[in-house]
Image (cartoon, rainbow, N blue to C red; front, side, top):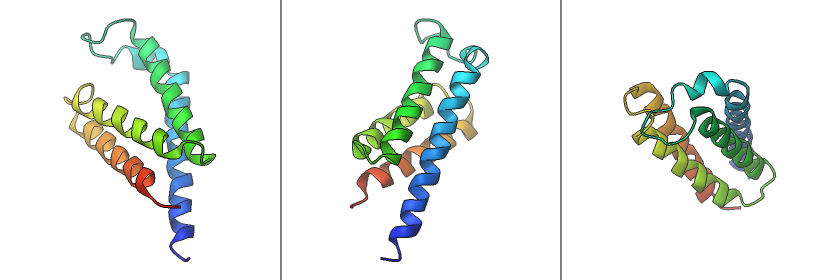
Length: 112
């Protein structure tokens, strides 16, 4: 029983951080859109808005325990995709994305 409280607290903090990343993407879409690599089709800001929406939806899924496993697996897939494509030239961002993806996988695989 004692392990439940720290694990749930970690989930909530993780979800709040992910939600903040979503908020950040919405409020800074133009600036972040300029960093989207050229090989990705379409305007960069569009992809930033989509990414922000995914972050917010994943956070809602974790906090509301609504399709939490699916939300975490999809979030982890997106973060790993970013780590190996978009952020590959920036090792710190790639490591951050990989670490966040691993946290999402831990939450997804946690039992109730």
